[in-house]
Length: 148
Image (cartoon, rainbow, N blue to C red; front, side, top):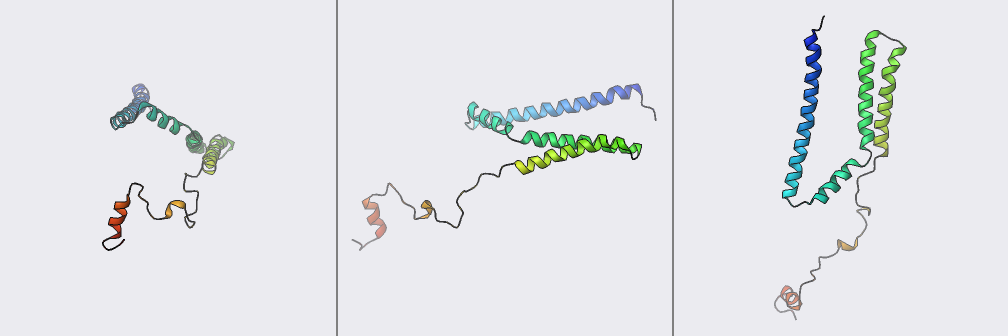
């Protein structure tokens, strides 16, 4: 099977066009999201704090691990067409390094914040609801007629 020189030029250009379209669409959606949040009253500082919080953490380990593992899998599948041999290590090594990075991500991720007090213990705010603005007349009205 021969590939024409025109196809050799057009296929990478089409792939590049798809990637650039995806990046452009992603940026446009992020822009529309920021505009919608600004209309709801969020300040630019709040939006920047949220964006910085999303960038921090161990997500880079997950992204790197998935990309490394998938590259290793692609190399392994490509090299397996040559048959069994030592060249398969070129795909196996990045595959298992990437899987190790994904494993590290899931084992070191912090549990989501939740209540620190067990639910079966008594808390101070579990009692009756107190209305601080209820006056003496309000208490008398709640007591009903004939009381006091």
